[in-house]
Length: 305
Length: 253
Ligand SMILES: Cc1cc2nc3c(=O)[nH]c(=O)nc-3n(C[C@H](O)[C@H](O)[C@H](O)COP(=O)(O)OP(=O)(O)OC[C@H]3O[C@@H](n4cnc5c(N)ncnc54)[C@H](O)[C@@H]3O)c2cc1C
Ligand SMILES: Nc1ncnc2c1ncn2[C@@H]1O[C@H](COP(=O)(O)O)[C@@H](O)[C@H]1O
Image (tube, rainbow over the protein chains, first blue to last red):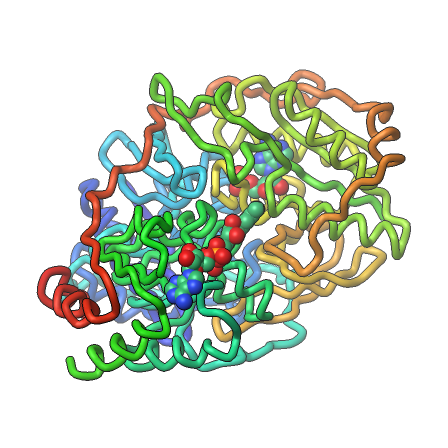
């Protein structure tokens, strides 16, 4: 099976999902070609085990993100077959564009792939799963952390091509993040607070625990709306969908729209004073306690690790 | 300026999703609504109508029940309504749905398209950029703020280091995230007018889109994997034990 992977890159080079996409492709018997937009991360891509070839696609359009320009430039470097991207905001956009321009279907947010090609994915914000069968080529975006990464030690050849395209989305102003904290979508550990934390003055206590273990801080919609926190930290249906290895929910009831954003986390810890709170239904470790008592103990226990 | 807003009528986010015969049982859905992000898209279009007199056309593609979504949009101020009648949306893959919506947008003559960043049922986020590709338009996704008029917009979207304000001009598609403006509520007059508003009905034939032969088909839909019940602990004193378990049992610390 012929698979081309569009690498997911960030300021530090390759996003970890790139290696996970390679694992998904090799599980189908492919020896994928990786395209690196803007030529970013070609050497690390070549060292991923199972990669057939790496192509750095260089062009002026890669200086900022314009899904139309990126997909048209990348498309020139795709010979055919099936294409994988990451199921991130940019990856989904490129996936849709590439699929539409080739007249083939796009299936987003795959959590499983098997020969055939059969793809599993969550729908209705995780309230159900769906298995899709595709005959012929397609574009698939792969959900971060759904596949284990491929090994390192690969020695694929690296080449470079030049393709650019007209940019029609221009960046006028960059606005830096208010805090230097990790983004909830990228973090391995997320600790989120909800209305049960009383008021905004108590938020620093949550942040202190997060800092102890290098976790990102998330929030329920109730506190984002009512306490004026940044929407970028909201977890849930109308916020971000996160899949960290550990998610700690503090004073969050577990409304269905919140669960939609975090239920696929690998391990879930919930701290809530109400033993009947729905959040305990998805928790691996549920602690019935007041946050006022729980957070200081948690901070101490983490610091003595 | 004409703005087409793509609205999908979906199970309300509070509705229970049940499965029957390997498919989501739509007959069992207690409440249907306009998909949440599409509401933000609609509100953005309506506020442009308020400030610069844009004409707002709401377009939906789906079965007969979707008409209610169009009436709801009319009740808050959509000027024209288009219903692409498709009985079973799930039988169509992305190429077909985007083909239908793109053809309908072209028929309305709108050069600006607003939609949701992802629909509450598919959760895909494919349609905005896909329609943009088909109509030869620029696209900005995850918009949380928009300003501008005359088809020249400034849009706020997330970026790797925070957020950024980007410029984009018609023809363009803007796919909305949550914004600070919730969809306005209808008043009695709006609801009365909406009942009488004509709906332009279209289908694959009238749009000239061949909807046969989707190459992606749904094998099955199923409930999510049941999670094994977790371990419960009482009181803050149990936290050290949980932390030890996270380290030794789950191996995540
Ligand atoms: C269309 C739509 C989209 C939505 N999208 C989202 C979304 O993306 N994300 C999201 O989170 N929500 C979303 N919601 C809102 C959601 O329905 C809930 O209202 C929200 O998640 C509740 O937030 P919460 O758990 O912080 O507050 P509450 O539901 O008020 O829960 C507070 C919890 O704290 C506990 N508590 C109280 N005091 C203490 C204490 N001292 N110590 C420990 N625990 C305590 C309580 O027992 C309770 O369980 C959406 C709703 C709609 C309609
Ligand atoms: N059948 C449809 N009818 C109208 N709009 C749609 C339809 N499907 C998708 N859309 C629009 O495209 C957005 C993204 O949908 P999706 O790609 O399915 O996640 C939705 O939020 C709607 O704005």
